[in-house]
Length: 150
Image (tube, rainbow, N blue to C red; front, side, top):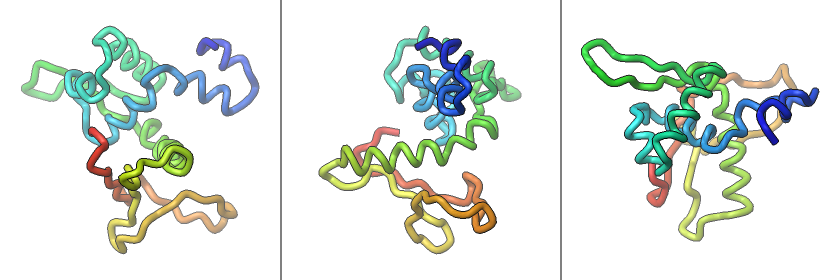
């Protein structure tokens, strides 16, 4: 289904898929949030063609997920995740938890999310709106297993 077709559905999941469902979009967002922000480094991380990466980064810019910036004194641009991109952290963590449950790695969890102050493992959950404890992406520590290439 094309991006346009998703956006015609009056369904928040379909509309999100119209923006996020493109091949590689969520993995590029993951890399940007993890500080992999130079074109060549993103390409190396994901092992995708330059043309496809260029297209996806342009779409992410158009959709407000990334911003292309040329730092002062440098010739090459870097890509910065926007707040809209950082707001995907719970979505990415939910996908990770689902994958760890249904397709676990025999060597153990590939991603662990912890509270940086207490060191306690964090999991996603549903809570009444008045009981939600707000956390930003800066309030969590994501640790990657040894076999995850980032």
